[in-house]
Image 1 (cartoon, rainbow, N blue to C red):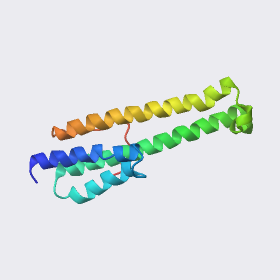
Image 2 (tube, one colour):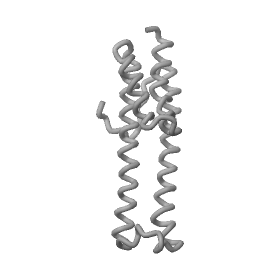
Image 3 (cartoon, helix red, strand yellow):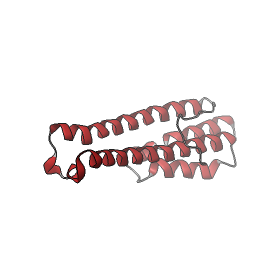
Image 4 (cartoon, rainbow, N blue to C red):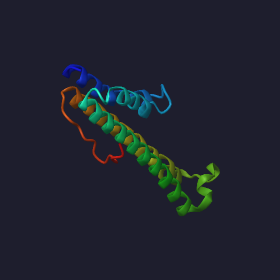
Length: 139
């Protein structure tokens, strides 16, 4: 495989995650990079490397976001008891503290992830190896 194709498919490993972000394919942010990586990993070291990196980041992002949601629920329950889960008990402060604040952090995390994915795709297209910060290396 020539260098242009290698760079294109390495970039595609990163950009294909937006299919999942946009809700087009459930778990598409993990499945499409996995398919690209499985198809082209033996033909190109760049695709193998960037495919692994993309998969590691998407898995890490999923773990971090699930952890954020669980932490928000635990903090809400510990702070105000089981009533925190009953919508009748939400006053303005409780609603902001336990619903809106974690939601804002969640949205900012996803936006930050999108910026990182675009940056990684640009770097991969240029033929450079990119490493996501805070990614758990599994693959």
